[in-house]
Structure formats: C-alpha cells, structure tokens
Image 1 (cartoon, helix red, strand yellow):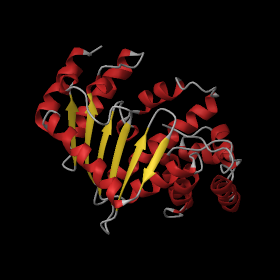
Image 2: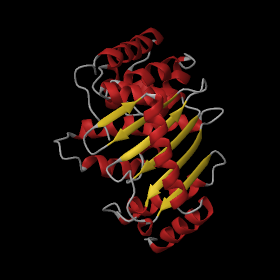
Image 3: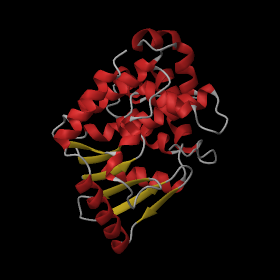
Image 4: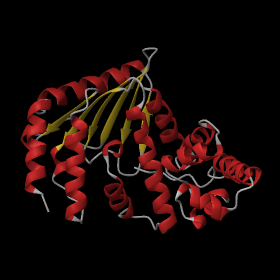
Length: 273
C-alpha cells in the first residue's frame, strides 16, 4: 500500500531538489551536458531539480558519481522518498530499514519482492485518481524500499505468501511471468525464506490483511497490520507477542521453503508466455 502525504512532500524533496540544482550549477554543467554524462533525459533531470519528480535510487547513485559527492544525494533521496507516506507508514518504513529480522505474511505479492513492471501495474489500479507522474513516484517509492534487502549484512527475512498472491496474475502475461520468476530467484537467497500458505490450510487468524513483524538489533520489536486502506503500528510487547504466535501458527501450516520453491517453480512453468 502507498499512502500519499501531500502536506509534507515539499520538505526533504525540496532540499534534494535544491542540492541537485546547486551541484550542477557549481560544476558548470548544462542540463544537456549532464544528460550526456548520465544517459538520463535532460527534461527528466530538470524535473528532479525543480522537485516535480522523485527519482529511483540508481539515478541518485549516478549523480553522486558524476559530482563526486559520495552518498550525499542517495542519503537525501532516502529522506525525500519518505515524504510520500503518511506518519504511521513512514515510521514503519524507518523501522523496517533498520530491522535485522523480518517476518511477513502477505495476501498479495509484497512490495519488497515486486518487479518494477508489476509494481506499476498494481499501483495503476488504485481506486483513487492518479496522474502518470504520481504513478511513477509511487513506483519509485515502492522500489526504493527494496534496497534494504541488499544491506551488508542483509536482514533475515521470512515471508509467508498466501496462495491468493500467486493466483491473481497481472493483466500482462509477460509481467506476471517475470514476477513469478523474481519470487523464485529471491527465495534462493541465503537470508530469505518464502513459504506458501495453500488454500487447503483453511481459515486462520490473519485473513483480514497483511502482517509484518520486525526485530531491531537492540532486541526491540514491532508489528504492523495493513488492510486495504489503513495500517496500524503496534509497539506493545504483549501485542507483538500475540501476533508473533499467530504468525508461527501460519508458518507451521504453510508449505516448507523447499516445497514452496517447487510449487512456485511449477507456477513459473505454467505461466510461461
């Protein structure tokens, strides 16, 4: 879920946009020259400098390299992308980015595992009106979260995917095939375990939405419950423990990681374009 926050979007984004403009002017580069060096369209780069668009991470990495600014722009981008989210979800994302252990249950393909094209297709179907620019910003914000999977050391992640997540394809067959392939590939990472909860497991206590459990390096933990249009961050020890038990029951009812990988590989073959 992407919860847009229009009231705060100018703060960190404005700082980032101003720094992009300052760095380019200080370097004596024209937009045309910068476009040539980075292989990004000059109009797109100009919209980043005016704060009209929020980039994806690789753009900031390329600009940091061009300007020799270390990870300055990447750091500002990480703050700016949080402006797209409401308070509870923003706090959850900040905690998620620091978590050393993650346990998730999802009834749809979670944003952390989505391909860019699948994310774009899913976000474009939101019931609220959305402009092309807003859609691209939402895609960039969603993909930006995935960087936490590549930290060093990476978090230990276990995701229980409801079978419904694997039976609801994208409108485009190639996009869906690529998304299923991504799930199979990600499941092979040593820090990642994916389990499929088959329909045959029956009713359970988390059928009203998705659940994320996070543990920090200091041992603290939180739970985040997400419905179609809402989210609730729980930090109380007893509440988190209660949802951990509910999660453990789902884990026991789900296919093992090995059997889940076999199941998903078969889906890849069944959906080959």
